[in-house]
Length: 283
Image (cartoon, rainbow, N blue to C red; front, side, top):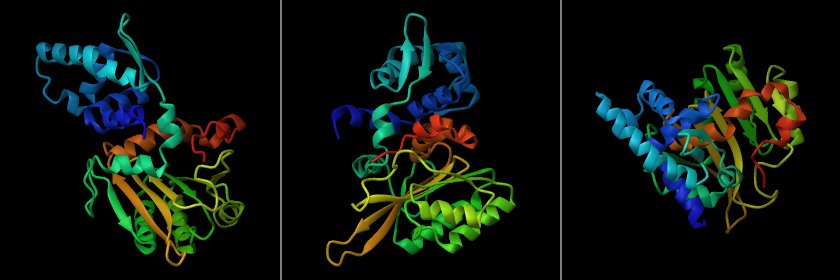
């Protein structure tokens, strides 16, 4: 990983920077520093956890203007006009293009604790296909409004997975499923006609036939995520599976994927060629 990409990850790892990026990403237009501060205060983010007086607001506004926003701009994460005090979110190409690369995932994992209890800033690691499948069912069952799924192969899309998706549809959850694998798309259309099915124009996993590679993605309500990786054994050639998972709106993995996919998910129903061409996942 080059120094610029490492700097981006370190900036995103800071919960205060993530709060800034989340507010800017959710904004429909560029914000002045004062407007950004107002929204950070309204959202009760960590960067404004001690705002009680106008002096506190001035202190944070100065920090935004002279410290945080310039650093985020230098990394290519925001556009900041210092003269006009106007800032907007800027999609970072290196993160978009490489977010699913294992080197980047390993670097991200190094900044956070891992374990079985998944909450807050924790990024958890799940080993073994049975455990990955079970956790995927858990996320599917936990979805209240929206479920976004991606599968590398028909083998991974088990009947039990489809059953849990069917139950989500019965709860009026909006479900979208994507894949470059024709068998996955055909099976989904036949089994679950209520699912929005789309075929990305670019592969979102690595070169076919090579390992490690991304196998499946489950993203529920833009607040809970599982990203599963397929690995081949050097000894007998068998394929194993592990996943990184995160839960909660402030979780770093959730924040990264939400910022990466959020605007595209908003327009998924249109199924337009321009939208599909703009999907970020590629080999």
